[in-house]
Amino acid sequence: MTFINYASREINCKIVYCGPALSGKTTNLKCVYNKTAPEARGKILSLTRSPERTIFFDFLPLSFGKIRGFNTRFHLYTLPGQLFYESGQELILRGVDGIIFVADSQVHRFEANQESMHFLHKALQVEGLDLDALPSVLQFNKRDLENSAPASELSRVLNPLKKAQEFEAIAIKGIGVFETLKAVSKLILKELQQVEGGEKASSVTL
Ligand SMILES: Nc1nc2c(ncn2[C@@H]2O[C@H](COP(=O)(O)OP(=O)(O)OP(=O)(O)O)[C@@H](O)[C@H]2O)c(=O)[nH]1
Ligand SMILES: [Mg+2]
Image 1 (cartoon, rainbow, N blue to C red):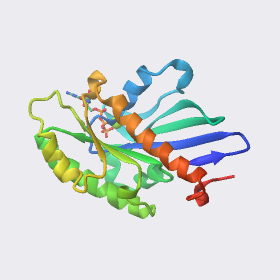
Image 2: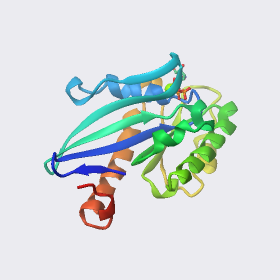
Image 3: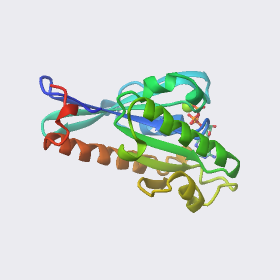
Image 4: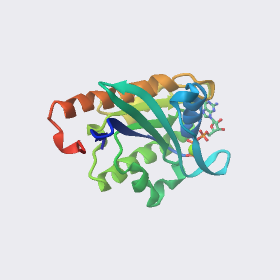
């Protein structure tokens, strides 16, 4: 839930990267960090076991600048694929404003993508949230690999209602990373306008 603080004139939004283990969530975050001006980003915090395995989460605060006089920040988290079967996921998803689902395009990760999507739906339900009602986008990552499934196949299975925008990406080369982030940010800011309009006044914290 977007946190709007009128006293300090701040807006804080939480975006969580989800998806199966090793799909490229941390790589997305590192790319955003590397390509963001130092004054607009905070420190990247990673709790990892080895360079490739996030244990609990990665975190990166980003300053978006001012929106109608409010300092707006996006707090980016990654939800490690392996944690998906444990209770920590709910903690990271709590209060989420937007979801980026990073799918691994490789054919042999097809079921892992599906399973991860299934668990995401369930974990959000625990928090009283519905993925189809949240600002969310899909990223088909690792398009550089020869054993990639066609994007249309991934879309059919992971986005059956075609509600979420889809982006093809090669996160290790930075391709598609910002497009994905921008798309979900836009959706969140659109929701915020509705908050301002009073339609969702209950989610505004005074
Ligand atoms: N070929 C290729 N490899 C990628 C791409 N994106 C990420 N990788 C590699 O995939 C591996 C896993 O990437 P991570 O970003 O650590 O994956 P993750 O989703 O954070 O994994 P967990 O933290 O275990 O959930 C690393 O070796 C990355 O370099 C890509 O677009 N193409
Ligand atoms: Mg990771």
